[in-house]
Length: 182
Image (cartoon, rainbow, N blue to C red; front, side, top):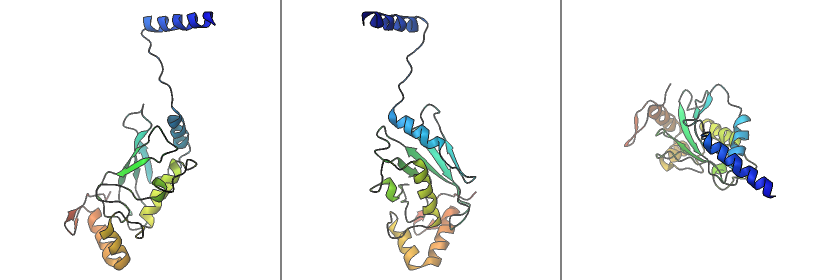
């Protein structure tokens, strides 16, 4: 036992003398995220970007729907994943101000698996599929943007006009939206 301890001390001295630093330990969350990212099925309408390549727990995801009301819009989301992942869901936020029943004006996303229905067996691919579905089929029964939800439920044609106007950077009511058309 004593010999192992002295070998470890000698190794630390050698590393310090040669200017090497200790390797950072990889956390369970990082391992799981790495696995989830490797298994992602990103089609031509989606991409990820890592502002800091050494930090896989914080990245952006860009979605460009190719059908539905939000077709041809470019939407970027930040993913912030805690060290408690997969026991806690990722925090997802839209970077553009958009007119959508399930995304509020601050960019918060209302998706059940990001809240009460999250389970550790779910992965990042499930989140991305859920987000794709929100753009294909907005859900007016569980809204964050109540005005958009009321339009969707009450007057589908007005909702469509408002989505198109807002995606072009126009106004809906008193709110000006970000231009997201590609």
